[in-house]
Length: 246
Image (cartoon, rainbow, N blue to C red; front, side, top):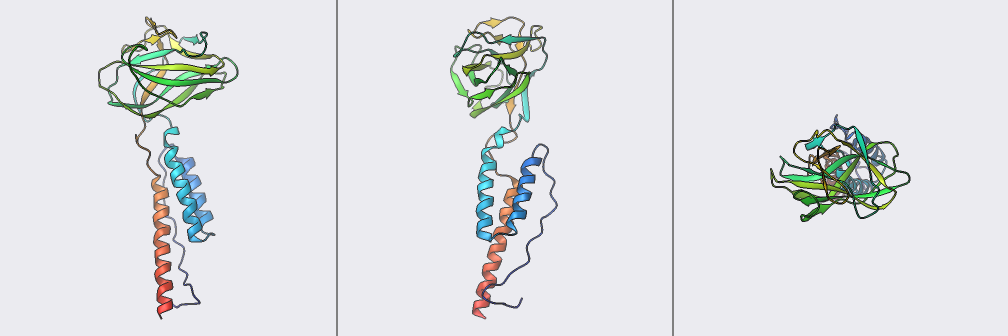
């Protein structure tokens, strides 16, 4: 390639055809937009943009719904109303067949305003066992029942066949409703009232399990983009050096 001036330019790499995995379409659309923007930037600026998005995507991976559901109960014929104030909350026990948990979902609604709720995980039946882990506080503002997702701060190891209990601890704000069934649809556990007393034949609507990756991993497409631009920068550097030596 002939040298023109101090810098030799190379053709911009074309993007390979890529189909994002289900549920990740929005993130990959953003990445595709970023690469289009990068084509009009200096490579160093583009690399900085992609790196920022790369780490943001890794941090947000657990915002997705549970992908490996272990225990679940979806039957309902009643709503439990949280009337006991802050520092208490309904619970649901379960017997895992997976050796870990990092998220759970419940069908909940606010009684009006925002209800701030945290998910706690206890060892054993009820709330008297060891507290194994918690989620961040989730604000519930919907007044119609919706699936509310809780991500634990870190993955918790479970002993398969041992009982554990999920508790929806009311931290502050409005009271909340939890969808449930009085017909004992989940035979491997039982619900608990806000005082930790088991309620026979009752089960909350819930699911628990893990995400595809327990440890956040970078987007494969973002990695591909970073690799492609890294290779382009190296090539430009080599061509520029060859021009100076010629």
